[in-house]
Length: 252
Image (cartoon, rainbow, N blue to C red; front, side, top):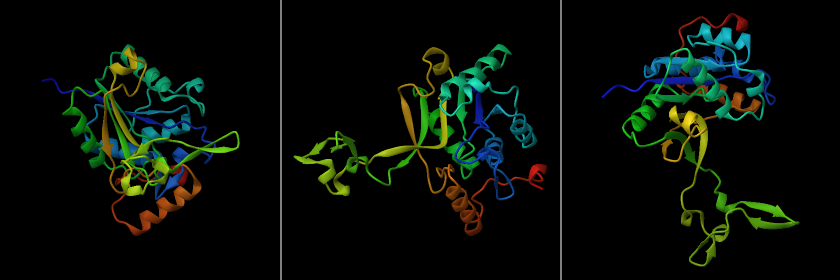
């Protein structure tokens, strides 16, 4: 059997609103996106590691740490509300037109710096041994059950999930009686590239679960997340991918 070709896509647009230049903000000794690049390279499962960015500065940083940036993302597909399918399709199509085709792609977002090479390897082993699956997505168990959540309608409370167990609404059941519910996190996604072109989708319908462990699914979106990440670095050993390069000069 031919070994499937897989590409890592690391999205790093420059227009973050909650934290300015979040994707290149310093964490430990290096910019945030460096850790996703290092994990991808060190996992040794990818035929190519590409950073998808709209910024020349981000591109310079990404290439310094070993990723490819064959071209910059268009501003049109780099807005706050730009769906992933737009930039994924743009990159895969451009690479396809240049003669580079892949069977699978993986999205590795820079906001998950504690996703280690072995995390990626574990996920790849799951999906490559389930060839009928369209994709795999990282998830974690919900810390707050959606069965206990409500929406406001006309000044009244309505249950978000109006389900019943033995005559008792979910919101009135003990947590232990409720079915386990999972939420996706930003750690990783792996999918067949044909979904992008045939279905205009990055997930498809047959989706495998990848349950993250420990800090693998920790996602940085706010300043307090950065502070928490710095604390983890100080208190726990070997939780970041090891980077041998001298830190990019912008941080010297």
